[in-house]
Amino acid sequence: MPAPYEDPDLDDRDPAEQIRQLADRVARMILTSSVPDLDCALAERELRMECLRLLPEKMSLYDLVYTARFRRLREQFRS
Image (cartoon, rainbow, N blue to C red; front, top):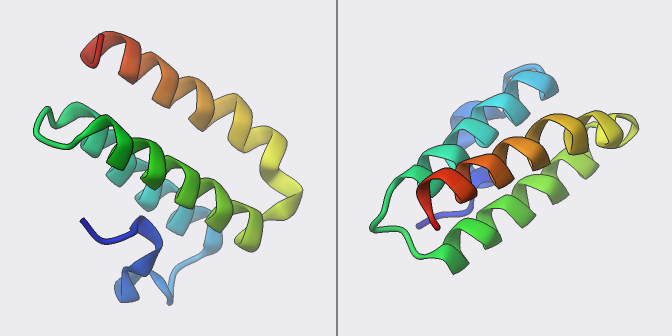
């Protein structure tokens, strides 16, 4: 599965919108049982790195919103 940040269609969007789109993709990966846990974890890490690149001043907000969201989804759908 390609890395979430490798979508050329996202390049023209607002950075916050890019992060939201990529986070939605990671969430879908977590919800898809055929995607291995390792791939989900790698995609989440890549998303975090992309957020750090695009919006470094918003990392605390990223942690509040997306880290909690992904943890909750893993607990609900992967345990």
